[in-house]
View 1 (cartoon, helix red, strand yellow):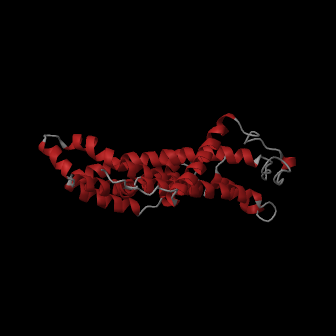
View 2 (cartoon, helix red, strand yellow; view 1 turned 30 degrees about the vertical axis):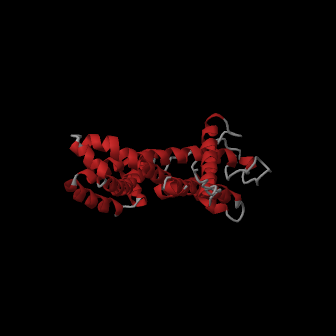
View 3 (cartoon, helix red, strand yellow; view 1 turned 90 degrees about the horizontal axis):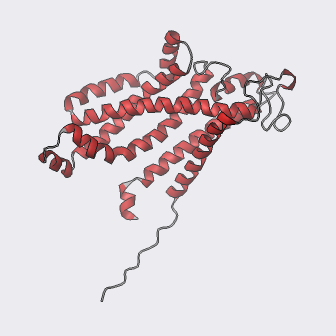
Length: 282
């Protein structure tokens, strides 16, 4: 007769709540950004001088800026512009950094060179890189994407290298070598699938960093040129009117905070969910 084994039911953990809140905030951010392509309360570039510096609910949902533009519409379109630059920059850094990381893990000679290159890239923060690129290329989306993306390359390279080196030490990799599989095939069939979760987690975390950096670049005038609205430039333009119209700074500031919080929570939740120790315990 088999003994009946009772297993405790897994309850709703804090990691699950973190993942849920992060996913909801991120979904709202992406949803608002996509919605701005087909609908906004007003034209974000429409100026109405007679209605400038109106408060929330007095003229529109969030009020108007110093040129009479609808703040809610600018915030929605700014979400799309900020996310576009952030996704492009992180995509650039993730692709090149992942390729460099798996190559370094598979080849000791390339590993030493990569680490020195990463140290050199870390010495140039995105703001400084954007200033130099802006002097050469002028301000704009390509300048922001390249400046942020180049800084992301060593981040992804280090994460990928560390994770890939752990996979290369596994016994099934030795078995694959004995079966006659080459380095490229092992990387594609065994290494990359096993580190994909860590790369995805890193993407969400770096997206939050990219949004913050893009806001800083736009604040300095190195992002998208006017009249395209961005959260960073909205903050820069609100400085003169902080006492007269504090909602001009409050709206984009809260938007940046919510976006960064959502992506960070999503990354933390995914990291906990993809942790193999948790999967074994559950």
